[in-house]
Length: 348
Image (cartoon, rainbow, N blue to C red):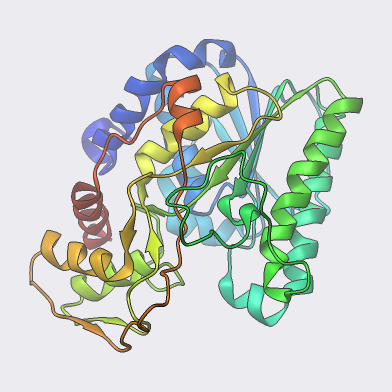
């Protein structure tokens, strides 16, 4: 697709501008990606294709997907490229493709709050078995660098007096709470990478991801900011079912892609990096920001009142390590990120 025909061209130029120096080692190389058709995956595919064309890398990407036909409808401009091929299969038991893949990205996760609540055992098995299969593949395909998209959930509940969580925080999720299945799966995935790298000669790179906003983010799932944008585009009031006090932070998807590629190519092996915005914003403020940033000025309804004296929940990363070691930062601020996301979805 030409630059003029891609609604993400400005974002993709932005990604390339900040990763241009990383791609030389990928010339003529092959990438294998799991989870390549979800939110993270679409941004990895978009930015890979953009860099591959503009830098004449001659690289190829093989993407594992469970539902190729759905992706062909979702992103035909990616599904029909010659430099991106697809293999149908499940991350837990996929057949190993032949040949060498110096770069492997394991981004397959059933990121479903519904599944985590209703069938936590399946959630845990999906994450752990998928990672185990991925590192087994790494041992047979000549991989040099392996990126695992982990999660800030590995820290468990963030203490309310801790404004931001750093990678050195020693907390963890409750092992007696079935809702910890997603978080424990991610913790086990990181451990599997560390164990495998002791036996095999590859570099595991760990990205502990937080909350994001941008094109390809579903507007009808469990992502609060996506729901708020969807309501506003529809001209409906934004409704918050809780009290609006929990804190999150949101990194724009193009910045996310910059961070992930940089961690893959330049990150230190087995050294986790928090990935996200360090700017806290509570849910009520997020809803107000969406209403303010987009046309319509829709009202915000908060159904519950805060409980006096009850500290607000927090899920906000300290990103000092990524900034100081890899030169990463948040380039696109929240209001701009909301507007870019809404413009993209309005084109669909």
